[in-house]
Image (tube, rainbow, N blue to C red; front, side, top):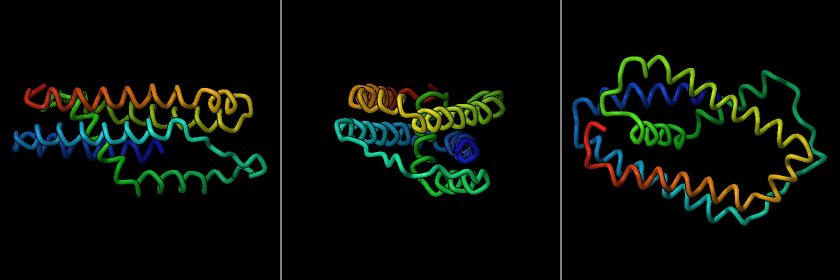
Length: 165
């Protein structure tokens, strides 16, 4: 998942700079579209917050590391929403012309965040007690996450007119 995140974030970072450096109105449009997309995702998270999750305790975890790697990578690379998500996040948080250090610092940071997050999720949900705690607080956790994503989306839309942010 981390390598897939680096791939999509790299494409978003390189493509955004090249494209947005030449087409300023597209930068504004991307911010609005990205903001609307994030609000859409937030609404889906919010609506699903109260829905229970089912876990099959008898299902054995796969121990084949190579197979797990390819399943994670193909899952990440086959999801076009990942590219849109990174494009939206970068449009919200990066200036129109990011400094050079961003191109070197962001890919390893994205890898660390993606790989770290999915490692924590896998470890937590493979253990009974953390899984039970999450399920107990799922609605609140999901609604806090939805609120954060929606706030980022609103920020994108409200600052869209400020080119060069």
